[in-house]
Image (cartoon, rainbow, N blue to C red):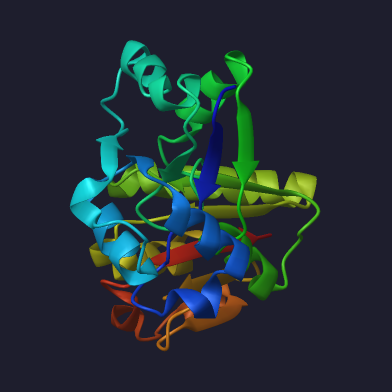
Length: 235
């Protein structure tokens, strides 16, 4: 018998697990002794909040990040091949969504191992739900270019695609550059293009604001700096 790979959603910030995770997700996570995680320090902090059934030091916690080779990913499947269940954990939100965990899931499928996604918060889906933008056609692009000219070019390309396909475009930015990104959105896009910023999702400081690009001009963009955020646009 082989083990099951459970995809365990992490919290999006400092909240009680029971406010955003269903009982089954918490129960399964508490039972696991083997973990494959993006960052061990973040994983230990999350597992501590769950009050797992074993001492944190007794858990097997191995790293899967952007630098992990394909051969090393295969080796991470060893607990599953040996009949033990394991959990895959991102630093925040759902594993496999904008994090390197997808490579492990693909390897598990290639080895005919059982994969079970557990319910929990996804910043991308929560932002899309709350935006009022098209939820039938959408695309997530991760990070856009940092340099101003390249960023402006990317934003115009996303706007053009959104208009042509009636599609919502989603992306993220390093939190300390959020204000810069908002300024670029307001200055670059057609004044009528809709722009939404969803910051601190699931937290007490959660803020979701959707308005036209023109209406974002002259606003206090600095209030979004250093806050995890999802940006959305629809032309």
